[in-house]
Length: 100
Image (cartoon, rainbow, N blue to C red; front, side):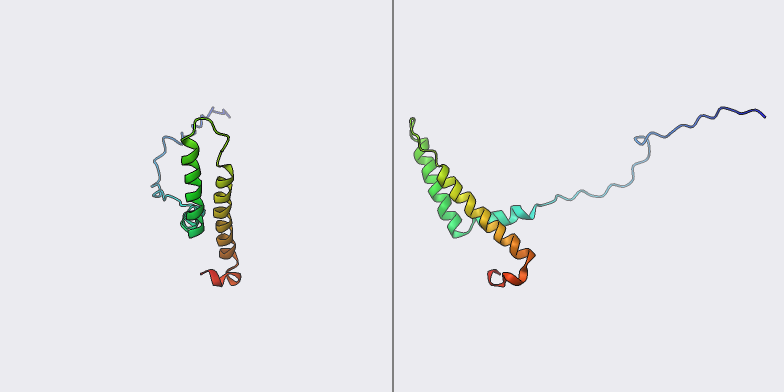
């Protein structure tokens, strides 16, 4: 009995016919949508105006120690708190019916 050498060629996955690809859907992070809504509330708008006024004041000066750090923190903390409250309410709807 003679054994013959068999050569097994593996197909290159690049050469295989492409299966129909599903259409790509742009995913939207829901947190971005919530953040945008929170940035529009009246308190966020007020804090943003204060931050912008500080930035304008600081940018007009060439030598100042003012940095607007506190104003930025106030704005970011307010928006983050709003986002967290909204997300918490989404998870525990029964607790937050008054917010809807």
